[in-house]
Length: 567
Image 1: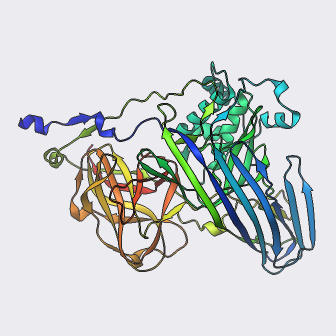
Image 2: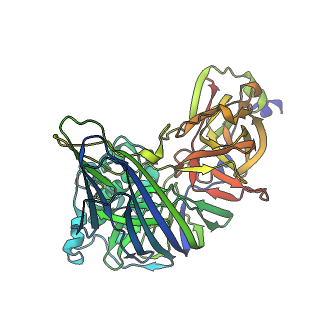
Image 3: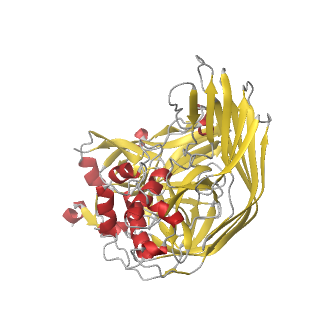
């Protein structure tokens, strides 16, 4: 009997609380009136002769799922422009360019509008066959089949993968669903990436929204499906969808975003966010500009200037986006399917012929160890793991792409897709993040990616067991950390919480970390879109009256676990 107690038990059932198919059918709708404002402040560098700001006017747009009505569009400038030009480019974008001659003072540009956004998620029906025939596509649509430097639809690796994914497929919906399911599992959200093009995304499996969009466009165009790139803005207001076992909260950062629209001959252009939504985007998206890739969709947010010979420096730029929701109605529910990718993908019901995409997955096993066994091991090997990638120390108000120029004294800066994705975690709710430990560990520290906005108080981290997919019994508590010890610099930084005094030994398994606090600290915890490291159900929160942790979040907080393991 004693030998049995000391045995290392292998339990695949340890992971029973979550499934390996995360494809959900979503039903219902959203309806909102959004008062949107974008403020830009530009301080010209000395010697600036001409300053140009470029804007794209968001257009009214209709699709079978996402609909945007734009009204009350107003542009205001603290310093009247010397000249203003308006044009419609070859993709149908209405572009406004404003110029200042010899500007010497800061200029504030404000764009405001009213967006009436509505999302209808009911059963869709499409009879579009695959592959599409040329007769089904107009010349204006065919341009979105082309390969570009960022969308390498003609590259042998891209073409081979696209053909593999769509082999024996008979409908366009089936082809789109298979490609998106593969992308959701293949890609990991990282910002900023080294490159933004489709081939880099394909080969590295990493990238931001531009990478997801370019890779999806490349794979679909490679097999004859027209795709256009969309640039716009996402708004941070969260919304909930009802699940069979609680609620799922969906939320984006507030800032620039890239997604795609896919052309169906019988549906028209239908929006897709390759990060997690198929055939729709939420009404928290403000659609602004379209093009063949993100090298073309640069007109909104573009700054150009010419300066005197010998002048140095560049304009100082700040961008703030605000949005109020005087009307916001959300009625959405989702139901898990027994097919699809391992990571979250939401799609309305579609009446079309398709073969369910099933990912072959070997259920993971963990070697569980009891306390006696853990104490006999020698811990000497440093071990660090977690959701480690985030833009440390970045001031999100001042992010732009690098200055570029083709010689001479003319330069430009483009918009940046680096967005602050963070949750206020010292309010009335408590937040918890799961991690899966694959090795025995002598725990030393747990770090969280935090930013202190103000207040006072004390922070700590609680480590809890996993009990049927939610936080359970307390395992250990870190040392207390006074809020004043956190940096006040702009941006997010690792804040380490010390567990060494607890001498905690952890068996392989699932554990939860939660931030605790007293006083009135004002702190945000940075998160990453999707679930780069942990399981789909691994981020939760509870309110004061909630003891069941029934609220799940669709992102993953950035954390790191440090300690010693065995060789």
